[in-house]
View (cartoon, rainbow, N blue to C red):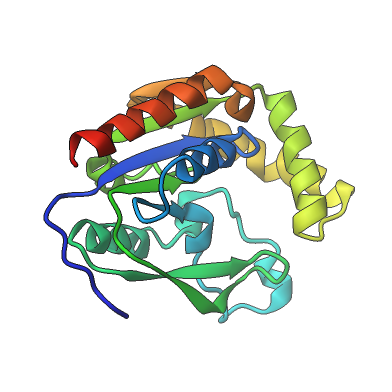
Length: 214
């Protein structure tokens, strides 16, 4: 894994919100508005813990919306490496088998590091690394519809399994762990990816940071 020497500290933008809130859309909009050599994106979903020690039937029953489902120590270590100008190997996760893939993706340090996920503001250590903290606030009925669409299309789930998981796990975990992190946000964006005005403002802010450092 190659390393890169940098003279300035990257800016970390944390983007969070409930499942289906549109946080990934906002993260992607900001990322795609910046020259590729200037930005990197780190998705919390990539940092689910490896579960090779569990049989497939048990992996299905893991609570993936609880903070303990994530390898937060590894994610923080990777962010600190990027801040120090060191490249990382970002893990990948296969949601169809509920386990980490063998493959990784190399990520070089960039001027802007976008960190996105449902619980990126839950860890005090991770919050301390962030320069801008965003909470995407979207109505629950919109979020569940988006999750149903995503899980059936991308993760091979049935409608019944998505609804059952939402009611038994996702909804209570949202209120216990995700919603409380709103108080740590610098900016709250309502209606997620459909809020073009908010996205444009954030894009302009990030671009201004890059321009001011050139």
